Length: 307
Image (cartoon, rainbow, N blue to C red; front, top):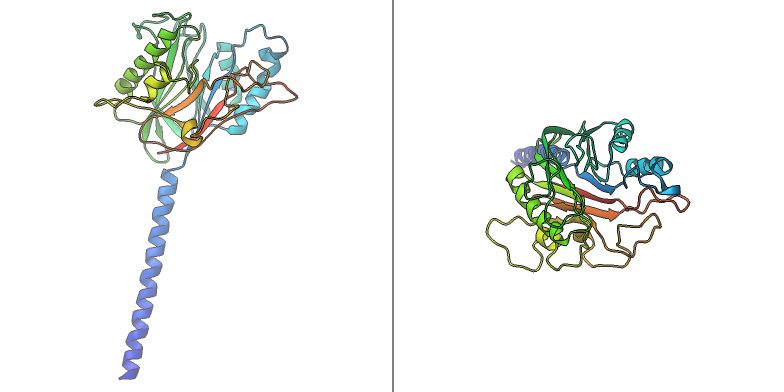
């Protein structure tokens, strides 16, 4: 009898070990699949300073290699640029390996004027659709301008599918007016409206130079886009500031415009924003310089996000 019980006990132990091993294997497989699906996306927003500016020792031809190195060091899956002229777009297209390009000039909808050019990693992301609209009361009218804006302003966007997870999302990139306070506020409201029209329920990422202090709330674009200090309304879209999600307390030296001097005491005007549906894993401001020279008059800002 004891021998029989010992045999049964041994069988149960063996069965338990087999079940445990199967569970471990299954769980490992699930975690592996989940890990593959949730591979984070790295995002950079970079005002690269227009290439025909009379900047002397900081002229485009003298800083473009450092700018390229700065981008490649972070190696973003998604790059939103501002003040990108056709000559700069061609330079980056030729030297950013594996990146696809979306962008048009704001002055004619083709090549003339500033682009809010987008570069994305083609082996990771598949383009499903793309488009552009102007920050004006007639956003579908090429080169249109409204309110108190000093210059024509544009938004470029691309709908992408993550080849790893199969998930789709929309990436928007823009540059708000540097003079018009009303234009910045109205541009923010229009951007939210167009995000909801274009993205629907899809998650989105927004990059840009917003020419407004992120922490000076007032009634400016930051408050409009994030819904800060006001109760939510039904169906309202509210975006998240990735930098503030990681660095919740305002600190000295968060400025993103440096004027080629490295001075970071000014406002944080370059942002990466996300809609609900993303988790923010990291965010920062890239202070790359070489021998006191900077790749642009703005510091690029970065974020790492996951679905």
